[in-house]
Amino acid sequence: MRLLVVEDDRDLNRQLVSALEDAGYAVDKAFDGEEGHYLGETEPYDGVILDMGLPGMDGIRVLEKWRREGRTMPVLILTARDRWSEKVQGFDAGADDYVTKPFHMEEVLARLRALLRRAAGHATSELHCGPVTLDTRSSRVVVDGNAVRLTSHEYRLLAYLMHHQGRVVSRTELVEHLYDQDFDRDSNTIEVFVGRLRKKLGVDIIQTVRGLGYIAAMPDVPAKRT
Ligand code: CA
Image 1 (cartoon, rainbow, N blue to C red):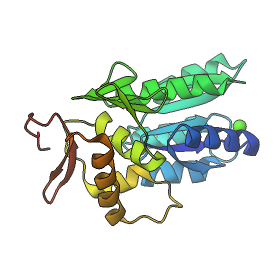
Image 2 (spheres, helix red, strand yellow):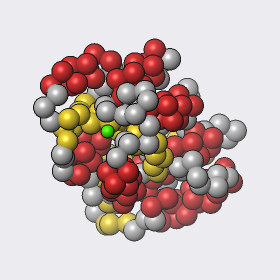
Image 3 (spheres, rainbow, N blue to C red):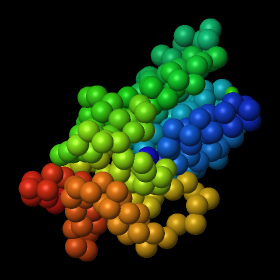
Image 4 (cartoon, rainbow, N blue to C red):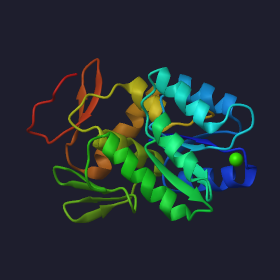
């Protein structure tokens, strides 16, 4: 999952980015409304954390523009404690949830997890695919009751495929959602990660759909092509 953080307070931006990276996300950052708007318009984020008080273009305008442009990614807004009207304006502009400053990082992470799984149509934080269970709270993966150790890239890959299970995901889509913009992207590395992941899981839940990409599905369930 790849996220965007738009926050002009440099310390807070850094704290958010590092907490999100520790939680296993690929993260891009912007420090003002213009830059944030541009990234959200041009890059395919799975979710955005957007501060309302930004220099230049404020958060409400950034959000309104994205929604007008048809950008539908989940957006969590950061609002000042005493500004209830910001929350109302934020929701009306297309926000999906909010956190009031100052906040606990755990709350931001929990709200984001909920937004990401709801966007992918899941009701709980544990995702299942055949014998594989992925817990998005702890970033842990269990196969048939046994914990499997994954690197952060392997985890991101599995989490993305399991959030979108039953749908064919192309290599390009994976590259766009697994790496931040500074990463040297090469879609060949995806094949390598898929190979390693299959080996570590030891069960056949990631299938290759020739010429199209990959799909996470139960081994005996036919792939639904989209
Ligand atoms: Ca601010």
